[in-house]
Length: 97
Image (tube, rainbow, N blue to C red; front, top):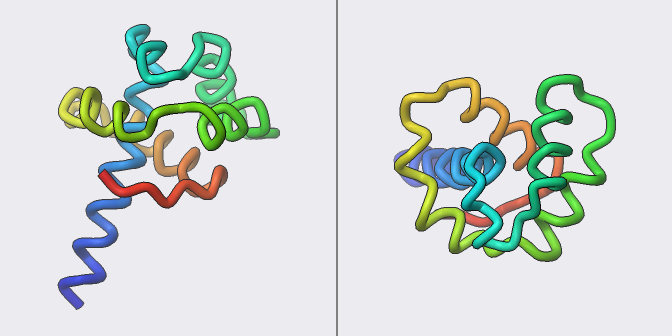
């Protein structure tokens, strides 16, 4: 049971890290363009297609970089955490921070 909670917590950490890259311009250092950031934020706010968000995240973003540099910056932003979870789920990202 505890292992399942730890996995969930780890997955949530990745989701939050993904959103951090969407809102911080420095995310470009982790292989995420401003265009990708805008597409991911638009997906979170309006739904629709996530192709413009998922493709770049799963094929070019440095997820280790995102986890290392952005995880701690999202603790005070529950909406960003929700957005990250939505993106992580839709894009099939299983990376754990």
